[in-house]
Image (cartoon, rainbow, N blue to C red):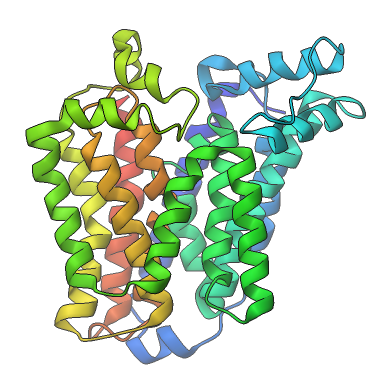
Length: 365
């Protein structure tokens, strides 16, 4: 629909401008009004639909959209009946979907369907978890560091983790909701088996609620990574979370595609922000909420495994197994609990900082 080089810059500037406008509105909103007033979601829903259409029908460009070109090449093989999906394959559901779409539509139609699944699952999650402030939490999602990339580059991983995110909003419900959560997790695993990590962490968090122990595990993961990172890389490469895991860990030819390898203190600090906020909410403010604890614990446990692999080439792929929850685990307490006086002002500052991090990482590239 537009030249490929326009997509991400225009998207980022829209989100940054929108966040700034929200910041000035939030300056005048007190804590009670922020948490209790139900805000209209028509604009964010319209923007989500617009994003789906424009990005779903994007040009086939490997330079600007990463693996989009590789998925397009594989799709053309399905269209020409040169390959067929293999049922025993770990990602059989995605391959089945690709083959089914290849028989009735072009590749742009397929990418549009993937984009619908990716964005709608996130929007649905936000509406379920934070119905009164869906617009603000969706701004956190749109402005997150990995959102655009996993809607255009790692689309299989993006679609799978968005299903896990939606499962998080159901799993604590009644029996019917738990069945829905289980179905979503099964679909996610059938699309990308690396989602086994956050799914297992979610199940652990459902039954184990000792926040201090979970935080201690995350802190220990930093020490373990510093002392035995290489040994752990060898162990994880044999667990089968991802078909490409072994090559990402051991093959250094991809190092230049990840700004720099080694121990990523910048990304560790980025990952720690929701963890610090969780510590403040749970231990300083003594706010206990079962839904928040489930989200927080799942994030902390998943992120701890990435910390252990932080030196690996392409470790950003493993970081996403926790980062896909980042905007929710950050936005949920800010938009649900009375944490501070003048919370609107502090929320606005955090939203701007969150989006600016993504913006500065884009400039840095």
